[in-house]
Length: 342
Image 1 (cartoon, rainbow, N blue to C red):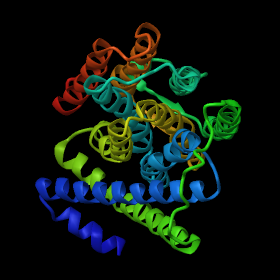
Image 2 (tube, rainbow, N blue to C red):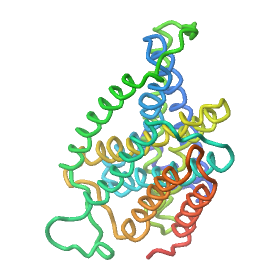
Image 3 (cartoon, rainbow, N blue to C red):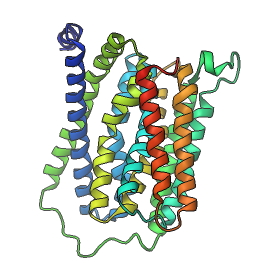
Image 4 (cartoon, helix red, strand yellow):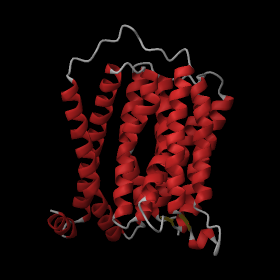
């Protein structure tokens, strides 16, 4: 099956390759949607509050595509794609998605959870960059780049467990996080829910498996670094679940839930996506020079602007900061595809 698929993409034109990527990303998004929906059903049946679902389970569900793509890339010996997808997803989540939803809708930001996890979001981003800087040897990052070591990937996974434990504990201590007694139990059976969860997982894993060689072939044809393609096109596609979830939450009047989902997804992109990908590779994840020239500065820039927006906006996120976030995302995307960063 793999050999047959490789023959197809090797003989396909660039427009066809882009179409295949689009189709695989669509399947990824649908699989993730199914995962999220059924996780919510299962959690409601178990009596877990909706806010807790949004901060933990929904964020985990919407991050599954990034994790699947990055881990498969790492296993297949494409570490630049793995790290590029994680970093690019943070830029897309914070720059594009948060920028859009806060620009077109008044989003309340007075929740303690948003402030608390927002600081952890910035810490996770800084930790990722620092972890990629070599301790010994050559440190000319703008020419030689760096590496996220396997050991740090394991540390990230430990921090992931601590973060999830802390989030659950914080949410249980928050009196506003009570379950609505009027919630009705979902009509589907537990067997049906589990079947849909397995189906969603299969869609995500299968699409991720075939997405990696397609991206690799496209990068070769376009003479672009794989990391830049994964940090823009693939990152946008695997961030579609966050986009759909956030827009839906805002339309239903749950703006804080939308922001919480994005913050949680950013944290998981570092601890879960990058951590899992680095931990399955003996040499860690490569961070080439353009990560330090463009991607890392853009990622930290979006996180800092978001923190400043939270600090200076009062009770509702100000549109000036939304425009800044969208501006950074636009600059990164244009610079990546025009080859402005050598």
